Structures are given as C-alpha cells and as structure tokens.
Length: 338
Image 1: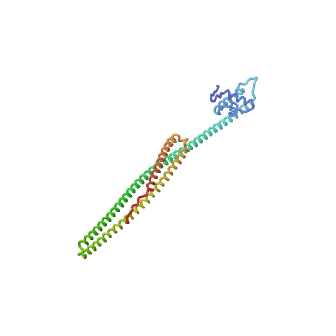
Image 2 (image 1 turned 135 degrees about the vertical axis):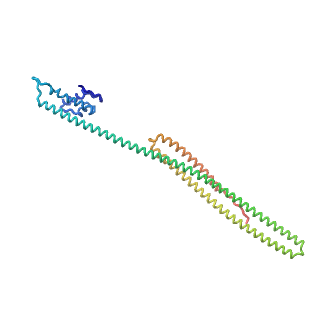
Image 3 (image 1 turned 180 degrees about the vertical axis):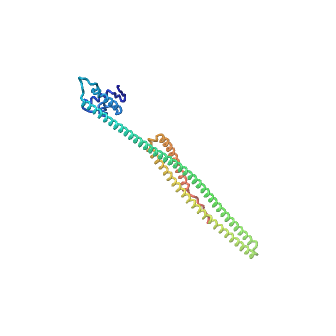
C-alpha cells in the first residue's frame, strides 16, 4: 500500500529514492541521512516512510519469494540483509527518539524563554505603575503646595492690612492727643491772661486793699503752679504714649520684615516644587514607549500646572513688590512740642 504525506510536500517515493541512493553509495539509510539527501522534511514525517522502505526491502531483494530450481539466494546474504534491516530500524528509532527529545528540549527552552519574557514584562509593568504613581504624587504635592502658598499669601495680606489699619489708628490717636495737649495749653494761657487782667483791674480799683490783692495774687500763683503741674503730668503721659507708639511702630516694622522673609521662603518652596515637577517630567519620558496615551494626558496636565505655577509666581512677585513699596514708603513723623 502506497503511503503518502503532504507535510512539507514530502512523499513516500522521495524517501524511498533517497534510501536507494544511499544504499548505492554504500551508506546505511538513516532518518538524518535521508533528510539531508532530500534537503527537507521532519523526522516524524521521514521515520514511518523509511520504516515502510525497510519493510519492503526483503521482498524487493527476493528474500521472501518462493524458491525455484533455477534461482537460490544464499542464507548468508539473507541473514546480512535481515541484520542490515534490524540495525537500520534500531538506529532509525534511536535517531527518532533523539530528535523527539531534542524537539521537547527546544519546546521547554522556548517555554522558559517565554516565561522569563513574561516576568520581565510584569516587572516593567510594575515599574511603570510605580513611576506613574510617583508622578501623580508629585503633581498632587505640587498642587497642594501651590494651594497652601496661596492661602499663606492671603493670610499675610490680611495681616498686613490689619497692621496698616492699627498703625493708622495709632496715628489718629497721637494726633488727637496732640490736639488735646495744644487745647490744654491754650486754655491755661487764657486762664493766665484772665488772671493777669483781673489782677490789673484789682490794682486799679483796689489800691487801698493791697493786702487783699497780695493774697489774691498768691492764690493765683498757687493755681498757676497747680495748672503747671497738671500740664507737666499731661506732658509726661503724652511722652509715655508716644514712646509706646514708637515701640509699636518698631514692632510693626519688624513684623513687616518677617513677612518679607516668609514671602521669600515661600518663593523658594515654589521654585523647589517647580524643579520637582520638571524632574517628574523627565522620569515620565523614560517610559514613554509603554505609556503613549498616559504621556499625552500627563503632558497636558503638567503644561497646565506649569502655567498655573508661573502665573502664581508672577502674582507673588507683584504682591511682593507691592509689599516692598509699602514698607519702603516713609512714615510721617509727628512733630511734638516739648
């Protein structure tokens, strides 16, 4: 029965012709030699065809044909053919087993390679997830710092405004105290003038009552002395209030300086956050082949955040300059009469 195989186009006649050619060359047909002779074919395809060739070899040599009177094949030749067939079959089976074992080893090696590659891909995916999480944390941290910086700036502005209001109230209080002092001086001057006028009138009208006039003059002196003491006391109290106002003014200037240092520190923190954001962008570029879609979204987010931070930095710079101009603005010094 003719055996045919369509695997890679190898047919039984090709295997038999190759085996016959090897016999004619004085070589024992094996699976590997037949494959080399044909130039193609797998061991699993060639092996059964070669076994079929060996199965028909005895009949083709006339070993199993009926004996006739004219032809007779020596038993030595028959035994040699049978030995040759058994050796060929044994070697073919060994080669087939080796080929199968080799194929299994190649498959196992391929499976190990695939497993290693799968582990590498899993590790790369884990690294990508870690880098993505780091990038998101850096972005969230930058946004939090920006928000906190804006809140601090608003509180600093409110505190500066309150301190300016307190300073203005203090100036108004000093001005009111000075007005009261001037008014007291005018009142004392008027009283002194009135006493002098009364004294002159008393001299003109009561020249005879000199003793009484002297008593009135002495009384007037006592009153004047008392008024002078009250005036000195008021001046001391005013000087004390003025000293306290100067201390409060110095404390206010020191607080303004502290606010300026705070603004400078906050600007430094903002620059550090911006640098951290740039570092996160560089890290994101390392995994751009695996995060093509995520990279586009991340770049848009980072661009918006950078713009917001730039605008925030610009606003802070403007506010800082405005605060510096307010601090440098000369404070009007009140002139007090000593």
